[in-house]
Image (cartoon, rainbow, N blue to C red; front, side):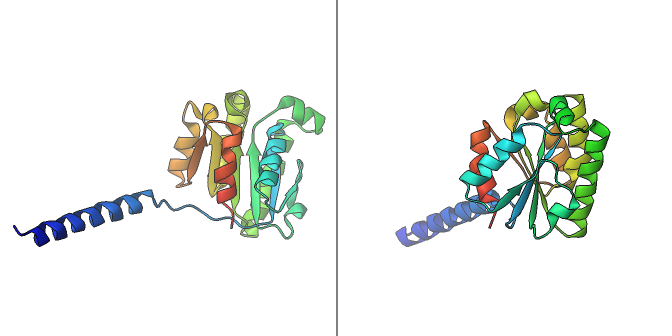
Length: 187
């Protein structure tokens, strides 16, 4: 073979490999719009961490721990922070049934207004358990994207639900590591 033919074949091979690897890395990822409403789904303290992340990401957001459908006015993205805290529920004057009803009503209104939902689970393993899992199982299928701290997904519950519902899932090691994908999810 001539030197030119080998160079051409090698170039074609490298181009094909590069194109394939770029295509493989190019996963469909939803892009959310601002302003966003951040609220709790379970009244855990992690809702405050989500607002810190939003502030560090320079996002236009509103925090309402007890958001209701009226709070969705002029909102482009709903961020639900999953994690049940019995202490938080008590402080908010809620029980689990009332919290589930509040979240369900909020999700229905978001769907009606075509507002996408981004779920965060920032509390790790400490925010998992039977009651938190009820919230996760009930509401996660409505999400357009999920960001979870890895230790809160040891049993791969988030993977299973996200795979079944074709929802992009991003796992991070620590809460602060959620900053980059959280910021990157917004226009």
